[in-house]
Image (cartoon, helix red, strand yellow):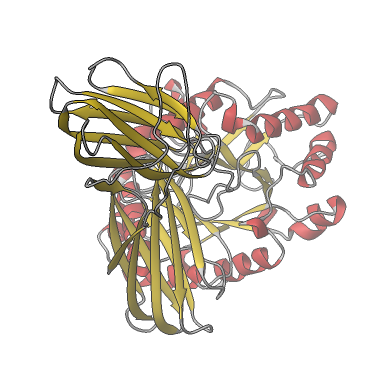
Length: 534
């Protein structure tokens, strides 16, 4: 591991600046001062990895202030595939890059919480030697200059530092001998005086400005009388706003202002004739359902086909005993499924036993282990994902929105633990010709916001076929796609209609009439996310 620090180029400011309050000498006098700079830090890590051996490793970096972190992962074997991950101080994945065999992999991330961050590297295929370069540029760069000055000798001293157009520059001059009188001056890269402070014997002298040029600026002191040690502290604060696109925080996370829009077609049916042909657009999100025996067969094959047809797969799988799963008795089977998912060429959303509160309207859980058992099972799956370095799967529960009503007698907190899931999934139905944008939906979004996660809808359905019903579909979509900034609650990242009559004791939820027309129209909306953009 190596460390590098950006060096400052020397600058001589030779200018005669005259003002009513002071006179600046036309040359610099010799300086015996020293400088300490808290500046850009580059760290380099190196190693070798193999997909059949050591396929996963991590490095840690300590960041003590806010700023921009740039990570670049390169490797020597172009046929190998390495992936890059960044974990925050709580161990959560906050950014990643996993392009297929392309190199280098690059992440740029704004650090707003100082602490220890972890960088994960996965060798997905092949083997090779890698080089990871971590480049951290702090929002605020500090320069500390110190030395000695006296009015009869070394009375004028200049120091230089870098600043960018738009930066805020704050300089403070302090000195030890209270009977001395020191003044402070700030010059731009052209040598022009920008601002100064020359209070009579006052300590400290302070100046501040916003840089209007990029280059080497100068801070200077003049000792008008006496002699004394001095210290100058310069703080350069960046006001730049990043224009980089946001990096997904989990596999398949869409950009703000977009969402995945799709459906579960009856009996895991083919969405082509039902939706894609009539609309002329791919089904952005596809929900499918499986038994445990299909976890490495039909589930994988369908997810692969979905990705090939530009659909984001959201798969649900029913499992053996929750307690047995949580106890590790099925780890080998879990690993088989996760390895098969990890080999797919795109993101997959995974749910382990959806609607665990009890199917068919029953208030008891679907398994004797109850909420703790369901959570323990998903914790086990998350642990296996981490151990295997699975990088293209987002894990989410799918609970019933009914669980957020007092009439259900349930507590959604019992089904949740921070760090297990990437987002919250819910199923939300309205068994009447009324909007899905009701109080229960608001509670779900507010609850998710408090947990710090986003929301996706695994199944939705409402009654009606007329134009008013079609408008309710548009309203449902519009609020969701604008949810990142509406102040109502958590952002909504995906919505899947239950376009089916299966397991529907109150009647089929198949999209018909104006609802179907609206659904097809929204598949072509520019705000509907495309999995190929991930």
